[in-house]
Image 1 (cartoon, rainbow over the protein chains, first blue to last red):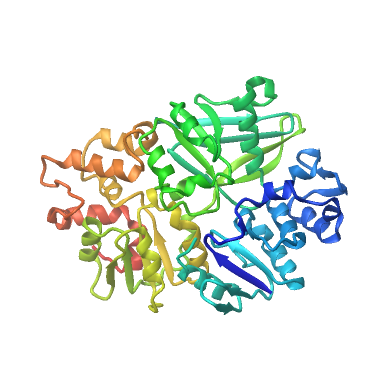
Image 2: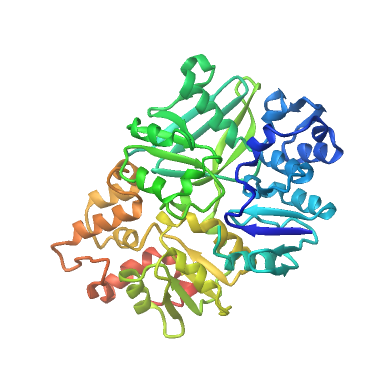
Amino acid sequence: MLKIVFGDVENAVYHPPVYFDNTYRDEWIIDPLSVKMIRDVDRSEVIGPKVIDSPVLGSISVRDLSGGVKTLMLMKFDETGKIFNASACGDNCAKWIYEISKEKDLTINLHHIMSFDDVEGFEAYMINTGKMVRNSTEYVDEAFRIEER
Amino acid sequence: MKGSYHIIVQNSRVFFEFDIKRNITVIRGDSATGKTTLISLIDEFSRLGEDSGVNISCEAKCVSANNANWEGIIENTVGGIIFFDEDASVVKSQIFASKIRGTENYYVIVTREKLSNLPYSVDEIYGIHSSGKYSDLRKTYNSFFRLYDVDSIYHNDEPAKRLIVEDSNAGYEFFKAIVPESVTCVSAGGKTGIQKLLNDSDRSETLIVADGAAFGSEMNELYLYMKKHPEIKLYLPESFEWIILSSGLVDGKRVSDILSKPEDVIDSNDYFSWEQFFTHLLVEETKDTYLRYSKSKLNKAYLNARERKAVVDVAEIIKPILGICL
């Protein structure tokens, strides 16, 4: 299930891409879900755990992946219990956040209202208000009422 | 600092080309569009100059700053354009807003956050668009596009039953006086008050009039909300004072020249947002006339038939929504 908390919270990583650079494991990169996310968000192909083929930048290292896809991998693989700031992710990461939350209880931190409009069957628990939202309209209405950012 | 700056940032693989014309510009949008790449190139050029292999073409000095060095960079930069990537959380603080106010620099900030402390324009929020290859086909060409196409937000011309005006004084008094009795006119008492008013249970057709020159912080969330609530419409002139200045009531080529290219006149050192400049200009231009303007209380001369019509004609697009016939 996806849980969303707006505003500053304890145990949250504000800028996940740097945390990723210093904690990721090679096996995360070649995981089938990572390969799909990198292909979709970064439009790049995983050649191996240390090399990615980017149509823009050529052969790049893992550190050159987008902040969005690094944050997604942390959401998927990190087991420290940290909460990651999904405001480091663009709206093109929303469907992957939801995909990850189907497999595990995932709490994300937001400092802006992310759009989940393109996510089929979207629902989430809003920690700030304790309400369950059953679609993206309910989510936007509820997020609009929450003052914390 | 004033003026518009054309900026080209490139290396052997990527080419960014864009223009900056106000003191605060915000870049946001999808992941992997090149935001961090752009800031990284500027950062490398800041540290190593031409030895970085990065080429920057701009009349103003372009530098990057972060959480650790931002105060020093701002203090030591005059007439420059300072770029912040999204890891620079300091940009959302009040101390940052205080520090950049009255400086001789422009600021470009990558963030998806609201930045409520900064009065930036809805027109200066951009995404980065990659549009194929540049020149020798080895470089990817990237340019900015305006993220919020305000004109496209008008879902329908359904008459509004409620008008929410951001202003609490002169602007509100003017709109309250011109709308038909069937329209309830309320002041939001500032931009943050709009969200509170929309959260009430009133679901009637609503038009919001706000100062676009400083409404950037509210735009993303309101834009998402409006996509879900087509009964909400939005009109964003630069400011109420800009409407009056554009009406022709304040005669003079000087005013029309200024309005055609405000960036050439408005100095970031003197005005934190264009809205403040337009208020100052209107006060100065009308001080010895029957149209003497005060922001705190509307001069009733603006409600005379001729003056009222001239002002409302500038806001032509909202006349059918408010059912105004003059």
